[in-house]
Image 1: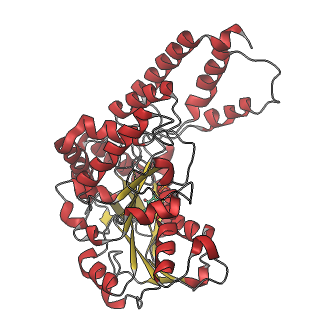
Image 2 (image 1 turned 30 degrees about the vertical axis):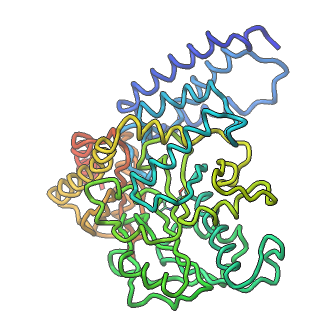
Image 3 (image 1 turned 135 degrees about the horizontal axis):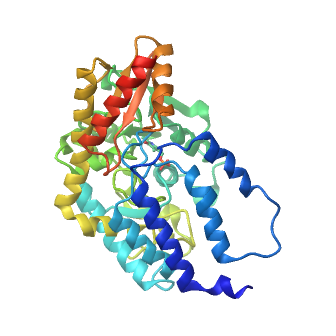
Length: 452
Ligand SMILES: *Cc1c(COP(=O)(O)O)cnc(C)c1O
């Protein structure tokens, strides 16, 4: 190996300088890279080299990689719900990277194990979910939903006398899954991977706001898993948990909540939006969206901790449930301690700072919707949480508007299908987005509309 490869101090210092320059410029640069920056990515497409050099590697990555990134960590990006990382969490992750722990349990890392246990407890407090629940820190909402579904299936089958660990899925009693007709595609992915079979998935119709309509809910029983949403992908709305969940639980149905970004309403002044969600059996939520932890970080939460541990336990022979480690609560065995970023945000913000963080998304999104309405845009729904939906006079005009605004380089957002038409969706999920950024967005949109 080259001497230089081992020059840790200098390399890390150089990387840190570049990282700081990158974040300083985030809110002043193009939001989506231009064609030239993207074309220059071809520089990476070379044969595997024989030798290399750490400084050159870093310089190259910064010269050709950084300009082709998307400034979703800045304040002018509104595509999907991505989230920007809070400096305190990004800083903690820098240190955790140096630790390079394998956070599978307390033997492999006492520090990670202890901190993630506290992080799990704080998450339950912040979200006001049952304190006895098990919390696993995984990579993303998709994986965490999958993890919860493994626990749900295993538990429902156990209740009807089928031991999935021993007997397997082949020949097992069929389970049905009811999902909102607006459900995120990644939920289907999780179900497909688990072998539920698309034919066993029934959709629950939603109303004009995108919420599951309790009057049209498909039948529920003890062989059903019902998935509801805290924060629908396009409209950001919440299903009527207080009406549906008690009914489902009485029927013996397992209720799982996809709360990728919206579950954090529980920690805000708008907690009424998710009232009753605490009655569910399991929840999945991202830390890398509303909570502003760097990618990738998410949580699976299961009310009956033993159901989660039973499904995820690494050594099925062991039964010591009381003190499960993360390797017995997540899909991974070897893993980095993703819960530490969560701990860092919660420890930095505290309850009140967390409330301000989430309240900020709502306040800024409502401000933006009002400003857009004042500028003459047709807002499709009142903003409840962080999503603004509006559209042009026709689908073609909506698309033209989005393209014109994106090509300005000042912002980026996407088109979403909303009921029978296309709509522009503005997701406010960066702590760096304030009223000032919203005003700039409206200005960009008005300019774009003149050009359409
Ligand atoms: C983002 C999102 C997901 C998927 O989350 P990942 O972290 O990308 O796996 C699922 N459901 C909803 C509602 C989302 O917004």
